[in-house]
Length: 65
Image (cartoon, rainbow, N blue to C red; front, side):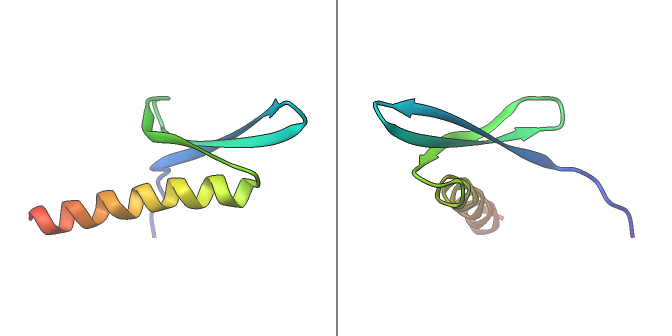
């Protein structure tokens, strides 16, 4: 079985007032940003939103074939 990294999800944080906001961004191996960055109050919320974008793109790709 071959393993290849297709993309990485980078997580960053920032404060808005006193609230900590997490941002998730899918990055290609060459550093290119894939999809839109997503924000959430938790890491899992931000990542789930990026994953939802990926699911939608896969669905659109399957439908267009």
